[in-house]
Length: 209
Length: 334
Image (tube, rainbow over all chains, first blue to last red; front, side, top):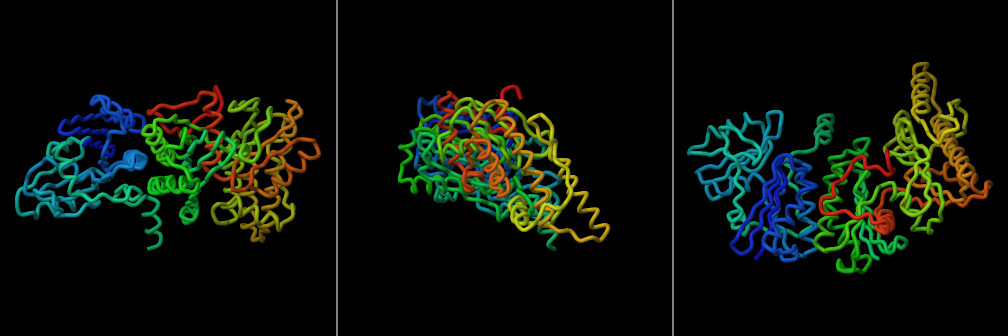
């Protein structure tokens, strides 16, 4: 079983490949222009295993939240590869993917969304949802966190380093393992999870009010 | 050679399969116009979101309509620019994924080359020719001596003609997109407003900002004087001025370069007044004119599939690092 993982939702491009039990991952730093590098990186990890893309049995794609354009690069690639190879594409959200591999009573996943806002979710030790994935201010999130009864960890995006926040793992084996519990949608329904409306939509709603 | 082509440069998601650059086997166009209408113009982020949501569905539909399988395809063509970067990227990434997994060539196409080659789907281009490209982003006279070579004789120095149409429409408070609305009104009007003729000189360049400003100033002045504006007449007067200069300059170019073929490309080619003017001028000057049907004037992937075939013949192939370019150039040294 060959599984390919694509994550272009942050400024760091992460590509993973698992061939039976052997895994490799490729991380390209924040200077990566994902549009130029993503498919090349996929090609390189396949070559390392002496495989071609036609050997891939399944794709796991990170659908966000994160950079809108970054998300679409990964999703468009995953959809077209999955469609033409006729293989399943499993969407995973970035907040969940980032906490996989961490253990604590509560795992608070957060991704910066600028202007003192974040995308966030809280999971328990088995990655069950305690607070569903959403967009909110840091203040609101920390208020909710302060009311949790038990220990928690803060886990951020792979490209954000903050002394209070752990950096997301990219634990391929564990992500694949967890993905077995996720539903496999029809390929056309693999879509980005933005968690935030566009500025134009927000403005229009404000005017309407 | 069967090329599957993808076009997502603005607010139309389109997939097409074209054989040998001339025959459309299927062409699916999903327009987002009604969505963007509510915002008075195309919202790039919303356009991109719709592209990624619909793209594989359209590929599927296109294959079904043409009764072909993915394995029947010989190459993938894609608009690599110019256009909205986020929107273009969806098409480019999808095209790369397809070409890579099917192990067939990936052909990057310039959006304007696509508009020019829309004509090739109606009738094979005859060289040498002059292409008059008139759209929301372009106003150019291009000399083509053979396939997929483009020599610029002149172009707009400021606003594109389509842009001027849209801005005038906005001043007249017409709904988006403004071009077709101006067209509708002008059919009911007479050329009775005094407006300047834009850049009537010996060059092949155009300038539409003066004409546009003249209309805006006129409307503002009339409003402040509490005079009524005759929208039909204003639309007609503006359209007359905007299109006459195009026709005049392109006919002049046919004489200087001794060319007897003109093709028209781009969204403004759908304008009724412009179509009748250029046809009339070509007939009286013994020039063969090709204007694509209105359905090929707006963005579509069939034109990209047609252009891709000739780009491929010129050896234009991209690798898996192909990136979209918002300001992709058509001419050397530009």
